[in-house]
Length: 335
Ligand code: TYM
Image (cartoon, rainbow, N blue to C red; front, side, top):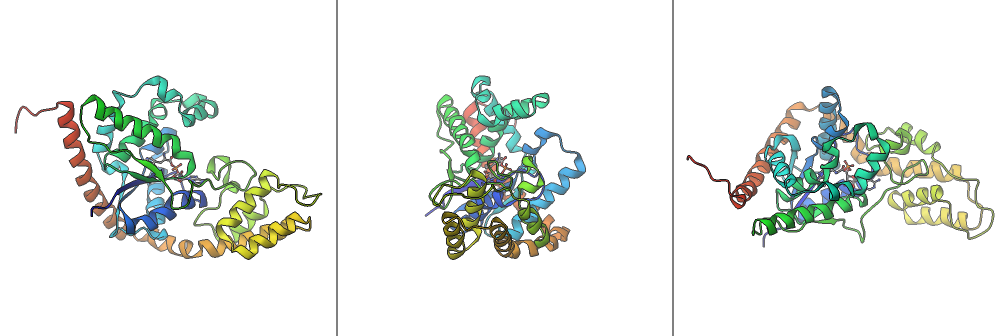
C-alpha cells in the first residue's frame, strides 16, 4: 500500500521553542515512520520581515540542526530547505493568478499583521497563504502536522488546490488537512500570561529547545501568575491555567495532580509550581538540547542532509509541476 503524503515546515526565525516542538516537530518525528514525509525549512516565508543575509543563513542552519537533534531522520523522510526548490515559487506564482485580494485580506494572520506592522504590509504577507499552499500541494500532501494557529492556512491550501483542479479540469491536487496525533491541534501557551508561546511576545515568553537548565529556571521564575486562590475550587486565572497546561505536557500525572489539588484547596505556592515545572522541562528537553550543538557544528553532515533532501524533494516537485504545466496549457515549441 502506498503511504499517505505528509508535508510541513517551520520558518527560520531563530531557535525552535516548545510550541514549535509540541505543535509540529514532535509529530514529524513520529510521522516519518508511518507516512511518506517531507519536512522543510520555510526560508522564503521568513523574508516577509526582511532578515539580514547573515542572520537568515544562521537561522536556517539552526532549524536544520534542531530538526535533526529532535530525531527527524534524513533516511526515513525528506528534509530540505524551501529555497532549494525553484518549483515552489513557480507554483506560487501560478496559484496567485487565481487568488483574490478580498479572500487574502480576510485571513486572520494578515489582519493581525495589518495591526501589528502597518508599515510593512508587503505583498508577500498578503499572499503568504498562497506560498504555503504551494509548499503543501506541490508534493500532493494530504496530512500537514501543524499547531492550531495554522488551521486557517490549511483551509486556504484546500481552496487553492480545489480551485486549480476545477479551473483546469484536472485532479492534480488532493485535499490537505491539518494533523496532530492527539485528539485536537495543539496550542502551547506562553509564560507571560498571554496566548500562545511565541517569540513575538519576548524571549521570556518562550522556552527554546536549546535553552540551558539555568536559563529555563530563570525564565520559569519570571513566569506570570496571580495573587493566588482565595476560595476553594475556583477556576485558575488564564496565566496560572497556562502553567498547568504546560505541566500537562512535560510533567507526570502525580505532579500535576499535586499542584491542581493544592490550587483547589488554596494551599498552592506558585514558587514551588514554577520550580517543579522548570525541572520537568529541563528533563523533558535534555535529550534534544544535548545534541543540538554538535550537529550544528557538523558542516559536512548538514551539507549532506540538505543536498540529499533537495534532490529527493525536487524530484517530487518536478513531477507535480509537469502535470501542472500541462494542465495550464504550456507546451514547448522545441524538444
Ligand atoms: P511557524 O514557523 O510560525 O511555526 C512552525 C510550527 O510550529 C507551530 N507552533 C505552535 N504550535 C503550538 N503552540 C504554539 N505556541 C506554537 N507556535 C508555533 C505552528 O503551528 C507550526 O506548525 N506558515 C508556517 C510555516 C509554513 C508551513 C508551510 C507549515 C510554511 N509553509 C507548509 C506547514 C506546511 C509558520 O509560519 O509556522
